[in-house]
Image (cartoon, helix red, strand yellow):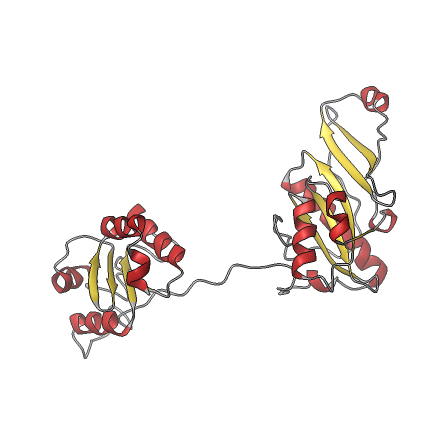
Length: 295
């Protein structure tokens, strides 16, 4: 989706479906067309508010459905057009220099998303169509996105390249976090090496090792969560071991207490030496001492 975007659904029905945003009789769906300084830049504004239709008409608003992708005017994307895009939430479609649709996205800030695409993919981001949805919820935005995407699929028989499953050109996904280390093959497997020796080998063969409660993706205590956040912030390559894993790290807590002579968890080792727990790591981080030690 690009900057400031909501996540697009991974799967969707390819049959063309009429967009239905509102069915409550107490509300009214209002649409308006607002011309920006560029006469070709006409943006659709959809708002769901507690207003009567008469009030809508007094303001010159027309009651209709979401404007079709094919009926929406495109605007050239350049450094001169940055100010022409609204910062509202909405749906947008990006076209390349040949006029081929590359990507359909939804966002909480149209201007920011278009600008981000122009900077990161200037060769593919040459023109854009946008539809502004005022006061939207995620469902309304998703339905607008589906309507435009399904219209394109119905007309061409194919999904825009940027919306194909697994595409990472337009949608930037967070890198997958490393898995936590396991010291044993299982609780009921007889070890040929004492567990303390495995701990010793682990901390000496890895620059940074954090023994925490839970996993790095789901710490199970506030102190462990703080340690993971600090190490992530430092951008250091580090390993984590879940001391609560009774299946693959059985007996680790008592073994580690004896090895480090430190009674609590988490425990952080750097270059084979115990640094301490969350409080010490936090203090070093706040004083700016941690970055130098981790280099």
